[in-house]
Amino acid sequence: MASEPKVELIYPPELVRSPVPPPGAVLDENVRVAMRDGITLAADVYRPEAPGRYPVLFSLSPYSKDIQQQPPQFSHAIESGATGFYVAYGYVHVIAQGRGCGRSQGQWRWFDEHERTDGYDMIEWIAQQPWCDGNVGMIGDSYWSWSQYAAASAQPPHLKCICLCDGTTDMYRDACYPGGIFNASFINHWIAYHTAMAAWPGPVDGKQPPMNLHWEIVNRPYDSDWWQGRSARSQLDRIKVPVMSIAPQGGQMHFRGQLAGYPQIDAPKKLLVVPPTGFWSHLRYLTNRPLNLQMLRWFDHWLKGKDTGLMDEPEVAIFDSGTRAWRYESEYPLARTQWTSFYLGAGHSIGAAAPSADEAPDTYRMPDSYAQLIAGKPVLAYATAPLTQPLKLGGPMSLTLFASSSQIDTAWFVNVLDVGPDGKSMPLSRGMLRASFRALDVERSKPGQPFHPFTTTDLLEPGTVYEFQIELRPVFHTIKPGHRLQLTIASDDIQFNNPLRQIDVQLLPWPVENAVHHSAAHPSHLVLPVIPDASEIQAVGTPLSQVDWPMVPGQWMPDTDGHPLRR
Image (cartoon, rainbow, N blue to C red; front, top):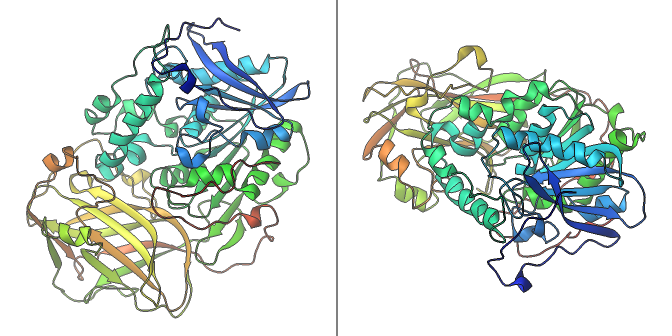
């Protein structure tokens, strides 16, 4: 073990508390592990009380390792896995803090070459320890999943499987510039949140300040090698270990890219499309017992050699957020998908029939319509008649929008909802696109998945009608009879942006008048993944069939139910 570097606490020592190990676990705290370039990372090792050699679950992230046993409602950084649950089932859990963060040396540079190889070095170190039987898997949500992609693509010999949750494969399109629009609300908060964890608990010999990621991001508004080198999508073909991919529906940042990347993984794999969570995906990941029992089946199969029956089951399991039922599928995207167009029409309607005549466009002005958004009202809304038959949707979807603007650039924010007979709505999908980024890579585009290179801007000619292909998040939902499918369109989104933004104000000139066209010459339409009925492959059994939870809106959950998860 490497020596402990000098640490200068910037807080009272009484407040720099050690993690409290779960019952039945022994903690080796702040173990130093040397990387190939000589810097050391700090890791906490949670072992079963009984001496022996065990398979290991490994978690790696710049987020604070010291808070990982706290209730997950306290911080969205608490995402490394349910330590006490897995230790009780005979696993060691190693939680390492990434370079340049906490007590780890080096500099955090957001998935530069060093961060990508640190996972490899940690795994090979773990495999040589007296408490490890040589079998290592990875576990964790969000950033802890990004690290799994990176480590697996480096192909360390002792890594036997990974189990990721909420892990996009595309940093540009999902984390920082969705639709080519700077993600101010997330980036401005996340970098400050990360910087504080990097500084904790004070200066460490060999630890450097983190890169100025905010500067790097705002100076790279176009997709490039810099973005692709930090995104798993450029490395998925190198992943050869078995992958369980857990995708919470409707996630604001990960869901689209995680599902888009899944078909590119050429290894034994499983996909679980779990119920919508809202902000709380990490909490469900850590506290839901049936979900963790399903993950345990995965780890027991690949790390302990147990016949759990998991690999005899179909590859894909999908939760329908409309019927609240699970179903197995053989592949993703679903081969039997019927790509169906639903057209915008007069009277703010949506229907299966394409418009056959000239119709006047629908117009709105910004910032006049901003008041509608503040009041929670749609700027433009289109809806089907009440459905007479169930409409089952399952997969990617998009909007082909014919529109014009009075300015040289604008933005489109699109939402799709299920509206019940009582008027209450459930959000199903959303997407956005900066108009000047409308160029398509036709060869890389697929039904419901238009692919924009985001490498150049093409400004608008005011008053000219253009076609915009807007990718929306995948949806897995049956709209019931009596309900309506609703589409809303605006040129701002107060949930995406924040009051301190400035870049998009510079780039998207106001005032502006935008027009949405729906005529025979300009047939704006949704491209929906309609799933026809088919016989079940087999019934979904326990524990997976028991995975369900309510979606809690907002960013605060008042209780700590389910924590800590125990055997």
